[in-house]
Amino acid sequence: MKRTVLTFLLLFASLVTGLARTAGDGSSQILRCRYVYSFKKDSLDDRRFRDTTMLLDVYGSQSVFYSGFGYLRDSSLRALENAGMSLPEMMAESNRLGLSSGYGEDFQYFIDFKKNLYEKYDYIGLISLKGEGELTVPEWLPAKDKSIDTVCGHPCRLLVGDYLGRRWTIWYATDIAVPAGPWLLWGAPGLIMQAVDSDRLFIFFARDIGYAPSDRRDDLMDNINVGLEHRTYPIRKMEMILNRTKRSTMEEQKYTGWPVFEHLDDGTMVRSDRTLPYIPLIPDEYWEKNKKR
Image (cartoon, rainbow, N blue to C red; front, side, top):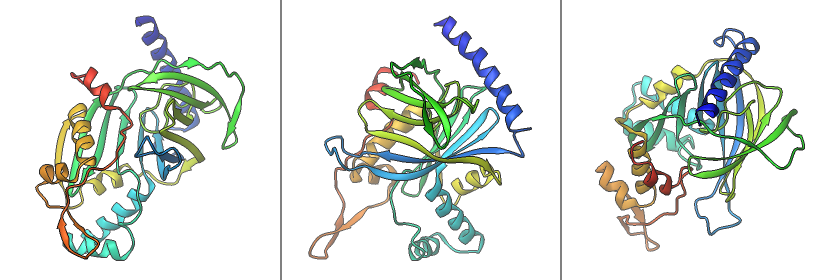
C-alpha cells in the first residue's frame, strides 16, 4: 500500500507540472469540461435515467464540480437579492422565470488534490449544508479491454477500480494530463472523460471540453450564501443527513423545522409524509464501514 501511494504521489506531481505547462499560470486559463450526468433514483427501474448537466472547472491542482442549471438559478437569485428583493419575492420571481423547474443535483464540490481535501455543498430546503472530507486515493487498474476509444475527439483508455463503495470503470484522456474528473473521481493518468459504476446506476459522459472565459469560484461561493441558513458537518454526517432527508418528506421537515405540503387529487392540501426513492453516489454501506470519516 505504501508503494502504491508513493507511486501515485510521484505521478500526481508530474501531472500537476504537466497541467501548469498546459494551462499557463492556472489563473488565466481554466479547463472546463461539460458532462451529462445520468442517474437513477430507483434501482428497480431499469429504463428510467434522469439526465442533468454538470460542469468541471480545473485550476491547477484544484477543481470545482457543479450543476450548470444550479449555477444559472443561483446566479439569478443572487441578482434578485442584490436588487433588494426579500426571500419570498425572490422565490416567486424564480418560479415566474422557470428557474425552480427541472430536476438534477444541487451538489457542488470544491477539491484540492494537493491537500487531499474537499468541501461538498448541498441543500435541504432553505438550509445550505457544507461537508468537509478527505480524498482517498483510487487504485485504478488496467481493464481487460485495451482498445482506445474517442470521447470529444480525445483518445481514451479504460481503467477499473473500487472506490467509495462502488466498482467504477473510467475512460481517461491520454492527451490531457489532468488528474481530475467528474464528481470525486480522480487520480487517473489523464482527465476522466467517462465513468460508469458496475450496477449502471450512475453515468458521467463528457460532451465538450475547452478553456473557460472566466473564473466562477467566487460566484459559486457567493451563490451558496444567498438567503440561506448554513450548517457545517464532517462529510460522513452530512451524507447521512442528506440520505435520510432525501428519502422522506417527514425527515426533511424534522431537519429543517419547515412544513412540506402536497395537494391531494381532490384539491385538499395536507402535510406531506411520503417515502421517496433515492440512491446516493456513495452507498450507505460505505459509511457504515467507515464510521471515523
